[in-house]
Length: 487
Ligand code: C2O
Ligand code: CU
Ligand code: CU
Image (cartoon, rainbow, N blue to C red; front, side, top):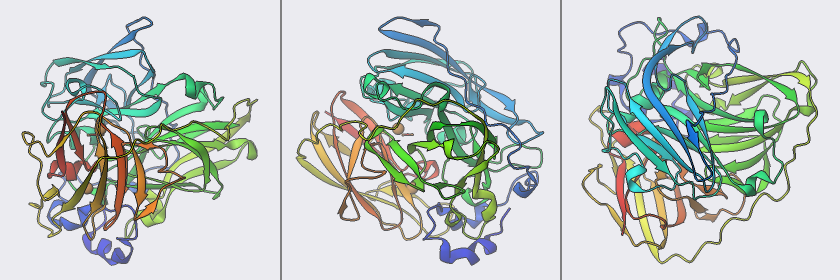
């Protein structure tokens, strides 16, 4: 574990680094685990194989719908080599099983909660009715509470994910494992010839802290001590690939950690998609940042590497100020172990995004939190802490709005996520966004201290009450969450 003093020494890098929650403001909350911490340096790197979560099988299916049933329950899995960690799962899978869905074919999932805490299952990025959105108060009781969630899948293809959202439990539930990916496809995506099947790989990235017995240590605002990086539920795994193109869908499912990812040889890859599906055109880059809740979709062409090559997916060292930098800069290792024919491609044109109707309403949204260092610090949207009964923003059905979202903090990064809609980031820091990682459809956007973005969205499809919040769950739990009502 890093001491607070050692961390603060690296303070110069704090604001520059994209990674810091406000954990540094809460010395009282660090270092009080019952068992001693497991030193992440002692965990073997690239020793476990990265699994691909199982694809959930529907128990019934027709052209209109597919029916699933998932059970939330505790189990123990090997997250670090040679130890079993107790985790909260969907169907004993850590992370949860992948749901594959098609546009126009409804998905219904019966969720049953066999845990000892309340849960609520939210489909992040999904365009669904209020009653199926998995709101914070709409919980499934522990010990068997059950509900059928209906997802119409009327929206275009997108890399969605599902996770717990029960008020005051979500942060720990997500930390302990209640997440899974939900890949929604459509004909538009399918005709492109992108790498598919076994070459289309969802990878959920997060961090964690362990005690000597291999059990998770969970404390709020504990970002600085979560120095073990997991990919698909394994600590620093390896993944064997053929020398060909792969589509990698990267999900940031961490509670607080921002990742800034690149390949260890510095080579470029094609960024092809973000939260709400494909970009209009591939974008060549050698690094990509993702904040909690965000997704990026990249194509890496391993054909330029000889069989036997080992290559790492790395996290930027700026994401580790003062900490055990070389640990959290490691993420996973690719091992090129065979050649293979490859007829997949990355077309120069991927999609045409829907026109943006003119906006008629403009709003300002301010994200802030106390930075006094007290454990009682609160977090706010427009100066108010979350009240589940209060409607903060009333929106007319069908209207298009521009929200200017600003992080007014000096130290803490935030991000902004809104339920129900996908938005476009039209400006960042006063400059128009016309290409690159934020030019597609988005539902979550990062905001470093002092930053501001303009997002534009149209509220249609459903009326009702939905959330918007910071996706750093500890900030959301401290109040940085608000209600929107579409009327
Ligand atoms: Cu990823 Cu309100 O959620
Ligand atoms: Cu969401
Ligand atoms: Cu925040």
